[in-house]
Each structure stands twice: as structure tokens, then as C-alpha cells.
Image (cartoon, rainbow, N blue to C red):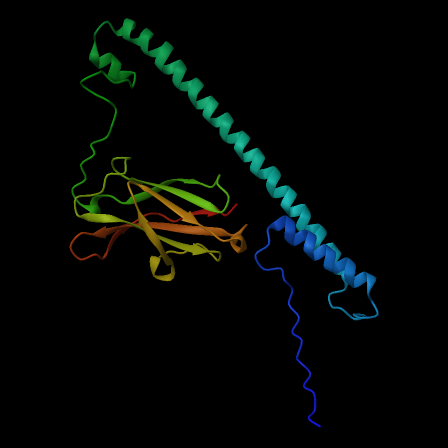
Length: 237
């Protein structure tokens, strides 16, 4: 009689792809099941009690992150409100008063740091002849969207997103974790910025990690890197 083959049983955790809430519940369910069936698994390592401590810490970190996010949004709203208040004071109160006081004397307006319509709009010259005369700046990194960074890149000379005459586009390099890089040679190419903006998406596994960025002007003819930005960093929320 032929011997009956015993099929090998391969155990899996079935935890892949779960949301944070579902993962926490699923792990706690498995811990409780282990506590209820010590005769089957008497020597689990880490012990169920140790795992309970880990899941409690995980739950606390999730709550802390949500609290920090709420505080960050509230702080952003307060910043925007304060900015609007300042601009309203300047534009609606100071400007009309100064216009009255200078009585048409342009030099007085300039002395006070204000512009004159049709003569001085306060904007730097947008023309940048060569990339060697300037460099890109990652002027702002928006981290308010979950698992996403939005980078805003400007020109160090004009303060706008206009490219130098010899630059084809801006490329973005990233490094997740580690110490701040000094060169793009050790970094990963993340993509190309469009009109001074770059959106970077992340996986759940990247939560809480720090990302370093460098923006680089790329030469129109050689397609080689020209000037690069100072490194900036942002945490993945």
C-alpha cells in the first residue's frame, strides 16, 4: 500500500496590506488567542505580554501623530490668518496714508520701502542669463497631506520659478533616512519639477521617516547637472 503523503502546512500572518487600525486589532486578536491557547504555543518569543506592551506603544504613537497633525493644521490656519491681517493693515491702512503723506514724491515712497504703480512693482528681474549666476531653492515643503510631500522650487535670484536661460528643467533627488547628504551622487532620482512644483508620494512603511531633498538645474545641451539647491529635509506624516 502506498504511503499517504502529509501536506506541509505553511503558516502566514495574514497582516499584509491592512490599515493601521485594522493591523492593531488583528495583532491584538492574535495576542489574545495566544494567551487563550498556551498549551499550543507555550514558548512564544517575544511573549504575548511583551507583544501587548509593543501594541500599546504603537497605539499611543498613532494617537500622538493624529494630535500633532491636528495641531499642525490649526497652526497653519493661524499663520494664514495672521498673514491676512498683516497684509490688510499694510494695503488698506498704511498704503493710503503714505500716498497722502508723500504728495506725489516718488523718492519718499522708495525711502519708506514702498513701490509706485507703473514704475516699481517690487519684483526682482525675472531674467537669469546663466545657471552659474544662480541656483534653485526649495523654498517650501508642504507636509500637510498624508504620505505626501509637495515641494516648491524658486530661483535664488528672482524668487520665482523661472528657469535660467541654459537650464532645461529642474530634477529632484531624494534620500530617505540617514544623515544629510552633500551630493546627489548618493541620492535617488525622484523626478522632474513642473512649473516649480514637485509632488512626492510615499508608502505606509515610510511613515515617520525623514526625507532629504536636493533640486538641480539640468543643462539644455548636455543634460548634465548644473547648479544644485541647498539640502532640505521633511518628515513623512
